[in-house]
Length: 286
Figure 1 (tube, rainbow, N blue to C red):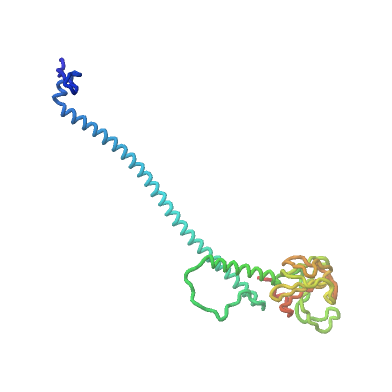
Figure 2: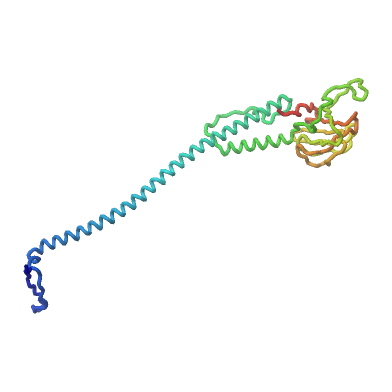
């Protein structure tokens, strides 16, 4: 069936015919519906484009937001872990400080038993309120200083033995070893050994005498901190010079039998502020 068409003549501004076109009659009769349908389709297409674009943008922001939330959650967990670690570290540090205090107290108790001066005596005429808040940096500085001070003092305190031989004559009154008659004051201890065996300093200090000295024979005298002094007599030879600084355990001479001696041995003396005391108080520190 032939479709009906309607001729449409297009006139110019002078009223003259310029163009004739034929349009199906059905379009002219239903142009309102067709126009409305076209507009609807255009609107539908635009809405679809907007929806797709909006959804894509929304998904992007949602993804970014999710990532940020996850990052914040991880940061929160990290902070919680760090806080827990700090609390654990604080506990561990406090335990270490308590251990240091305990060690110092034990050292002081041992020094008291030997009649020696304590490293950290109790404070007199002191007091004040106790702060509840713990300042760890300041506490660490205090204990570092305390340990360094203790270490420095220990270096200058004669402890241990200068030779691992057997004690043949102890501190105090004894019979004359040459005549076996009468009593004499023995101001040190005698330690047996073989001629030439090494003799070591029992603490860090400064050599104030090294050479021959009367009944001592060849002797090394070392001054230490806090009024301590040690003497190593009857040596066969000395290995240090006057004015030389020595460390604890450093060899200062060799065992011998010079001076007033009945045989090879070391005569070891310990003085505190010029007063001779029994060296056996410091031979074993346990």
